[in-house]
Image (cartoon, rainbow, N blue to C red; front, side, top):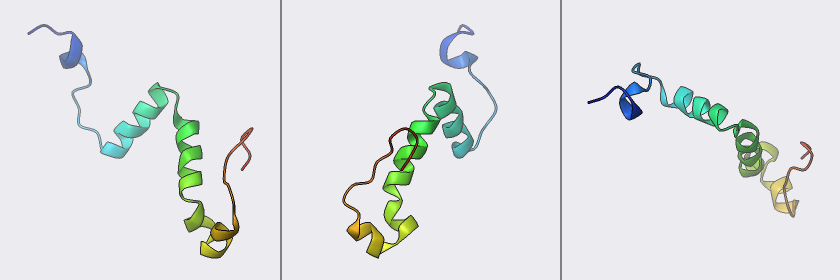
Length: 64
């Protein structure tokens, strides 16, 4: 086989979290992923009472 394509990638083993973070960095998706994670985790962050009274959670201009 030739040394291009799949076989020319990194050979060392990396933890899944590290590989995922590298992928987000490579595609410049870190900020969007953090925003989506925050919106998804909103009930766990503020509690059930506040989450139930919140009609919509979104981020605009890096503000919640």
